[in-house]
Image 1 (cartoon, rainbow, N blue to C red):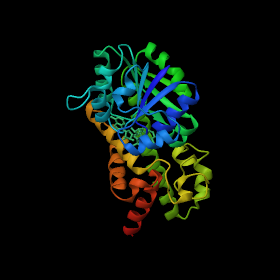
Image 2: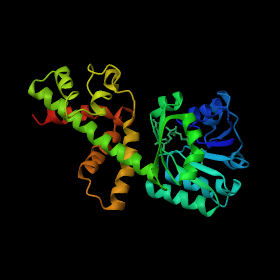
Image 3: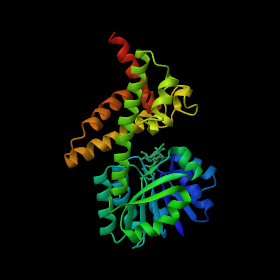
Image 4: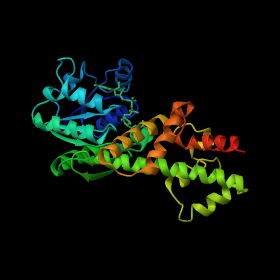
Length: 302
Ligand code: NAD
């Protein structure tokens, strides 16, 4: 199986190398020279252009930042050839970038019109998951295309879920991250309220982690130091999952909410809170660091 892997950033490079470890022939490419150098240093063969990488590939995987980057690369920009044109008909396109549902559907439609197969396959699990091949993949696309992609996704991850047709992998991702944002804020507010009421962090943690308020934002990503020694709060909120990434994902949630007309007041309030958080130092801090903003705002209200 010859695989073109485009986008060799924080996530893409370790994912590409895991495919190589699984025995596939992988050729990488990134528009950023530094990423190409890093890939070569890691032993990954790197093509001169994305089009060169896609030519003769059985599978083309993209791991970019935005939907516009995916669509531009598929189509080609400024009269240049795109990946869809370079690849042989019937090539399987896998986009693992986190992008808007409607952008993912547009990418599927472009691939289909060019005679290719495609799936959207965003991930959760972060850089550690990419390095250790323990990512979770959420997949949208036709059954046969999902089945064709599954062994490759399993070489890069631990859990692969077929969520439905085109764009529904991105839909699952955006729904999950909207829940995560709301619950991380709720847990942070509860700890600050507990502090004001005289509750020790450990006491609140021991109760809630065994009660109906239990959630990942508390038991894995606890926003105060102490109760969960591995949570980012214990290392001054070094990410983890940076505020800038949560802000980006909530922008995708906002787009989906606007597109569907859903009444998502909590989700959209979380979107505003994380937009403010990521406008400052929070962009580079773990998103559980939002507790600091909540505490500061509460102190000034005294
Ligand atoms: P990154 O910025 O480190 O890497 C993206 C790479 O794509 C960059 O090196 C960029 O130069 C390259 N690129 C853009 N357009 C290109 C093109 N046309 N051809 C070739 N290369 C191109 O980003 P990342 O952290 O690896 O994240 C990638 C995606 O995964 C994002 O959509 C992100 O939201 C998502 N994601 C990231 C994490 C995380 O923890 N970093 C977790 C889950 C999901």
